[in-house]
Image 1 (tube, helix red, strand yellow):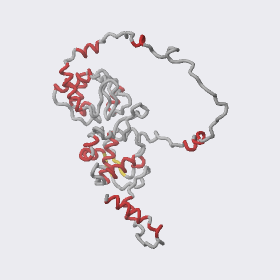
Image 2: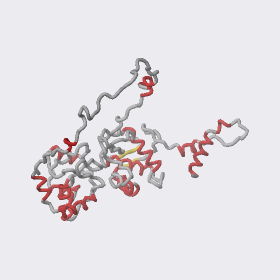
Image 3: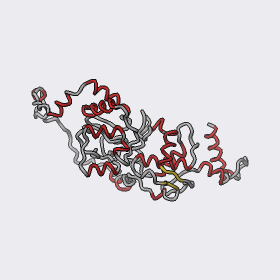
Image 4: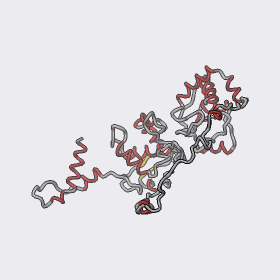
Length: 336
């Protein structure tokens, strides 16, 4: 409340000249230093940015301490707090995933919002270098920069966001409003209308006979037969282990990419092949080579991800217990 009243005071001081000739004689013109204390906007071309720099390596630690409680260690979002990474090329989907990486057109919006409003409950406690570092980490989480890229006030305006060209100017006022504002045509109108046919009469509505027809069931293939033979208790244990993964990955039919790729039918799938997911260079190369995930390769990867695939963005340290590795692979093979 005090801060709000102070803003009103500053605004009043800034507009005092309007009342300069009034009998009240209150106030004075606001000093540049007083105005600048509130004028902290950062524009898309970089105007308003303070001097500073930061990279994703430093930003990861700051993000973990200041932001991860709400947004997750990998910017994947927790509960109702928004995800900041992932969702690339989903904007035309029925359920688009709008994140900083997939949707926001200007990097300045991210810098300005963090500087102005974050962390939650401690707004404007971050230094300029800390803000640059957090912004860099969010860009890295979206695979838009390498971890050693140094973001600063000099190269900031040159950075092009993924969806920067995904917006159009709303010109309907010029291009369409005139068509809507014409006088309506009230001539040669049809005097009356009547129903001539009904859907049930012309047989365009399915009846009971069509819904009751038996649908031929295909025989189970060998893959499904193998799934049936997996120990249900092992699958259940694997589902429990997968809780460590579900903040970043989705599994099951219709699963969508999150901050990590969807894992439906991952065993037997080509590496780096999830549609619309931006993989690291290592997985792109594995995809080009046609490498296929099998149970043993998945176990090796989940045991030590960074050792298995150099440059992977997956920060998870790995599963240490063999029983957990066997269980999660069983779950990944059967998740529907």
